[in-house]
Amino acid sequence: MTLATRQRLEQLLQQLHPVQLQITDDSHLHAGHAGNTGGGHFSVFIVSEEFEGLSLLKRHRLVHDAAAELLPSVIHALSIQAKTPAELD
Image 1 (cartoon, rainbow, N blue to C red):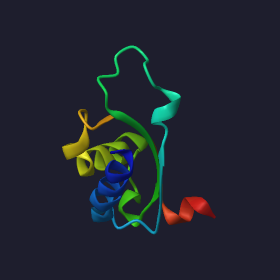
Image 2: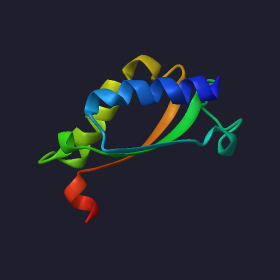
Image 3: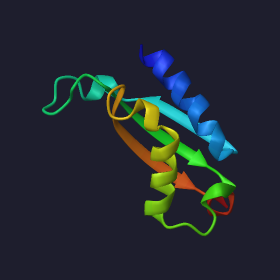
Image 4: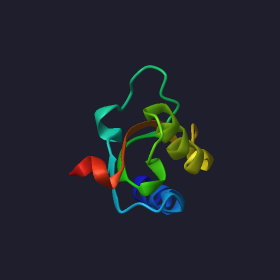
């Protein structure tokens, strides 16, 4: 299920027009911790022009909104690094 989840998350995040996107399944690091209802843990590194001029909170909201169909049931936790292309230089 985690490969399918990762692939679906990648599809959903395409609406942010990423120039770089890395998704890592970290579920194995969090197996059995308190509060986990069975959903996976994922880390996202995304670079997009869509984040230009936005605060960190607004960037995270865009990512959460894009992934909404997977949260919080399929994905229990999402760690996000959201940058603009200029921030990579």
